[in-house]
Length: 51
Image 1 (cartoon, rainbow, N blue to C red):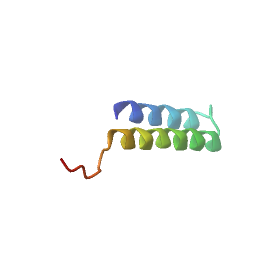
Image 2: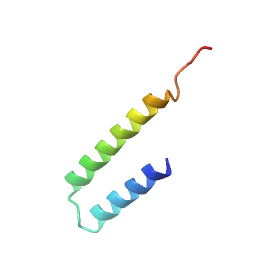
Image 3: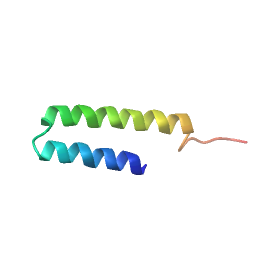
Image 4: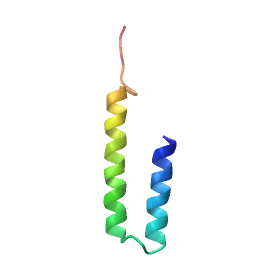
């Protein structure tokens, strides 16, 4: 999850510094969030698994 936080920090820094528009930063953060959700689902984090 550290990688996720680093990427969020990087994207927000670029937006704050004027290197990315607000819309582009939002788009990149949204894509990053979707990637995190896919990873969570693949790992079955938070699901009730019966043995």
